[in-house]
Image (cartoon, rainbow, N blue to C red):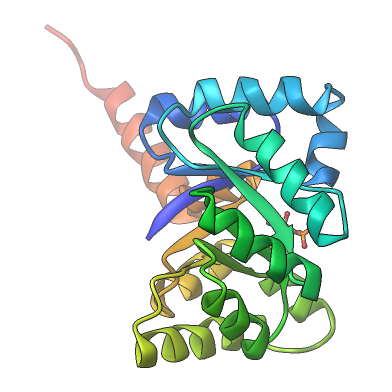
Amino acid sequence: MQFFVDTAETDAIAELSEMGILDGVTTNPSLVMKSGKNPRTVIAEICRIAAGKPVSAEVIATEADAMVAEGESLAEIADNIVVKVPLTWDGLKACDRLGRMGIRVNVTLCFNANQALLAAKVGAAYISPFVGRLDDLGLDGMELIHEIREIYDNFDFPTEILAASIRTPLHVTQAALAGADVATVPPAVLHRLAQHPLTDKGLAAFLADAAKIKSD
Ligand code: G3P
């Protein structure tokens, strides 16, 4: 499973990139707003840091023609831009048209299997089902990843399943087990993947014993 980081914080992206565990980046207007930087400037900076890896940048237009124009403009920022459009009827039209222009599209805000089926039909490069936001409603967000995996496999759709709205390390494990192609994970959750209390306890014991070793 590929790891994308879900953030517009460039320091975090640079650290993950240097570690070699970064396969791509996803942003959205909320994350760009939190960065406090000019949207095009920060997206260009992210594309440089994650050179050669897909960086999703989301349109804010809501009508198909305007989404296509905005998508074309975003795609001019760098070769590794993936244009993100919402899963609306107009978003599907824009996905189809951008795809025909050779621009890769991530269809976002997906909350059921039929939406994912439509995104695949219009040639989305990625579909982004939001696991955590379904869990927030008392539903089983991860079940949607299983459903989409089965549907895409039934018909050999090449659209990659990008598990989004990932909130916990358990979500990451479950997304991998469900066969998601990608999980996009906030930096804080990525850090938590490496943590285990028994690792800390074991390390503390080893260090305590090492301190007792007498050197010659
Ligand atoms: O990738 C989508 C993600 O940013 C949404 O996450 O936690 O706001 O539901 P969240």
